[in-house]
Image (cartoon, rainbow, N blue to C red; front, side, top):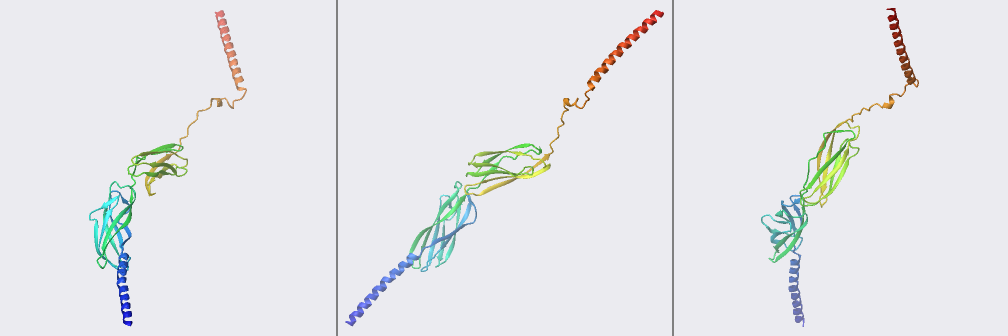
Length: 306
């Protein structure tokens, strides 16, 4: 009876041991999983048509087995493709260790701005030679370069106090993305305060016109140097700007001589002056008549004496 009990006990122990080994193996297999712990680019921003190197950090967080004979393949995304070899081999990634995997990539010339998922296919083995596969994802942001061109900045070299200078400029969006909040900001000494003109949104390939009037204030004679800042934003909120130097010579407003008022000619003259003038004319006329009469009498007297 005791011998039978021992046999039964040994059989139970053997069964338990044989059943535990596959369970431990299954635990190891399930725990072996490589993950993408991070990624980085060697250039920023990443623009359409650019070449860059994407470095993905692959980590083995498991505690039961190393990852061996690892193969990592960049499958690309909607905006980029591998630039050269798409696969990288790593002999071993130990328990709790990481490896930096570098993938050269090329961004397609017609890639639209935005976020894109790039997939990395992982193939590896554990210590016992069992094979595993997984796919890890990293996200890439494609930026649209802002290309804002403008016409010549034309302002007169000279201005007079009180002038209103008409200004106009053409802004051309030469890129493939919409530009937002296009703005003209003037900072000139003769302005009472910095002056801005919001041009607004400019579609790809479109031209927008910015117009304003600059009033030349008083008290700023001589050379006035300032700036015009042209700025805009893209869909991601990134800002672009260009500063243009300005210089204008402000001259004093000429004084205009006024013609005398005809009504002012008689103002201040005495009230008796017109009457005196008339009386003088009358006396003069009487004297002339008297002189003529005297002359005629003398002539008649002389004739009688002859």
